[in-house]
Image 1 (spheres, rainbow, N blue to C red):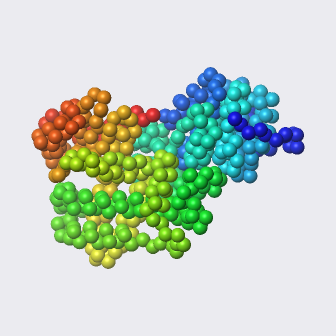
Image 2 (spheres, rainbow, N blue to C red):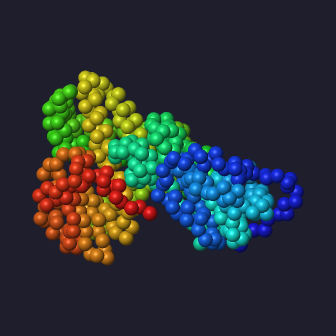
Image 3 (cartoon, rainbow, N blue to C red):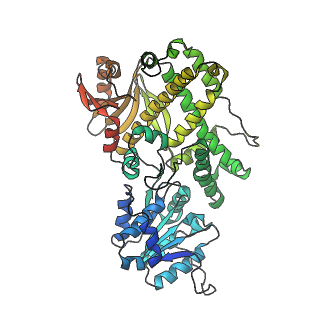
Length: 520
C-alpha cells in the first residue's frame, strides 16, 4: 500500500514542481510532429488512450534513446480537449514524494487526467513510496506515465513497491530496423559506427552523433551508464543490491571501475578479432584485393609479418594506464558490474556451443550499443598505429593496415549484431554459434518445439565465393548437426549483396534480413 502522505496545507497555492499543462504543451508537440515513431510508441499510445486501469506506465532507458520524444509525440496526437486535461512535470533531486503528492492532488481537482512525470527516480524517496502512483492516483482513473534514464531505480521500484501494477517499456536497445526507419539512415556500416542512441547527424531526434568521437563516447559512458548505477547505489539503500560494489562506491571509485569493465570488454573483443581474423585465410583474399586495387595497389599484406603484427598489437592492447586505486578491482567486482550492465540492457551474452562436448559452454559478450564499441575500438586501433613498427611503414601501407584491421572489427561486430537481434526476435528458439573441431557455423537457430534448425554463415562482403559456404555444405558437419538439432530447414549466407541462390545455398542481404526481424 502507498505510504500515508503528510497534510499539504503548509504548501502555497501554486504548484511546487515544474508543471506544464494545457496550451503550454503545444510547443513540445509541434517540434516532433515530423519525427517518425519508435516501435514501442504503440504500447505507450495504447496505455494513454486505452481503457482505465490500476497501473502506471514506466518509460525508462539510457540517455538519448527517445523517451522524452515519445511523450511529446503523445501530446502531438492529443486533441485540444485532451491537452487541457494533461500535465508534464519535471522532477529534480530536490523534490520529494510529499511535493509530488501535493501537485497531483491539485491537478486531480482541476480534472487533469493524463500526467507525465519526467526524471522521477531522482527523488531519494521514490522507491519506498512508488506505490502512491498506482494505488492512489491511477486507481482513481488518472493515467500516469513515469519516465527517466534511471533504469535500475525503476526496476527496484517494480520489485519493491509496484509489483504487477506497472507496465514497463525499456528504450535502451535500438535495433538496426529502428535505426534505419526512425532516423532515416540506411546502411549497416552506419549502424555499426553510430547505432545505439537516437542521434545521428540531425535527420531526426538529436542533432549530433553520441558516438562521433572518443570524447563524446567517454562522456556518454560517464553520464548515461556509470552515473545510472552510481545513482542507484546512492539512493536505494538495499544491501542485497550493493554487495561488493558498496566499497567501490564509498571509495569514490565506482565510475572508474564501470568504465574500466566496459573498456576491458572492448579490449578483449579487439584482441579476439585480431587473433581470430587477422591471421585467418581471409588475409590472403585481402592481400590479393589490395594488390589489384586500381587506385592504390599495395603488396603490404604480402610483406607484413602477420604473426609479429598481431602479437605486437595484442601486447599494446594490454598496456592500459590505471589511476591510483585504493580498492583492487577483482573478478567479483567485474561480475557484479556486468550484472548491472545486463539489467540496463546494455550487454547480452551469445552462447558458443562446442559439438564434441555438450557440457562445454562459452559465451561472448555483445554490447547492445554498437556505436559505443566501435568508437572505442577505432580510437584504440588509431593509437596503436602510432607504434614504432607501424610508423616505419609508408602512408599508403599504414592506411592499408589500418583499414584491414577496422574492416575485421566491423565484420565481427556485424556478426554480433545479427546474433543479438536474431536472439531477441526469436525468444522461444535458441540462437548460438556452433563450433566443430575444424570450422564453425556462425549462427544456428534451433527450434525445440518443431525439432529443426537453420544454419548461417555471415560475411561483411558483397561478393559470392564458394569458400563462404563450404561449412554449410560439409556432409559430416550437417549430419552431426541434424543428429543433435533435427532437420536443417535452411542453409543461408548473410552478406552485403543482392538476394540469390547459389548451389542450393540461399544468399540473403544482411540489411534486408535485419529489417525484417520483429523485436518486441
